[in-house]
Image (cartoon, rainbow, N blue to C red):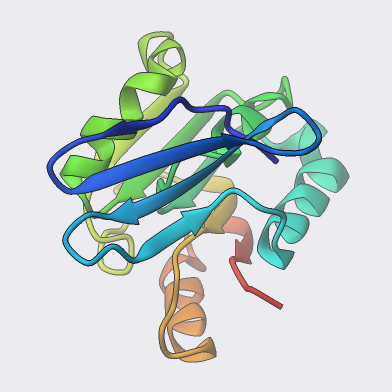
Length: 166
């Protein structure tokens, strides 16, 4: 999975790109105030889980939810499944949305992608139900937060997948 985003930054975030040995660009996202790397577009088990769900159920998926924007790695992957009509992304950081959102403007302008600035752990959709919810957020307290977010969305999504490093 590779976004191929160019290097970019704003007052809070920096995307660094380099050409990987396979010729693809790999990206990392860092918070400028701490210098901590927040995201790297590598293949993690959480991505394997959502790719499995997309492959197994892609023909039936119409509405997808994603908690966390990051560098948007999964946006083009999700839309590569032609039956997916809409993707709603909930991201807590407006400055990250401002930096990354423009790279996915074509999906936004055609009404397929909606990016909402809110804390996905607290925000819940009004009268919205999803075929699949992918919670692509880092959790510092291992499984507790994953369980909580999946409980919160259980009435809003037929299937759910959480990010995990293992």
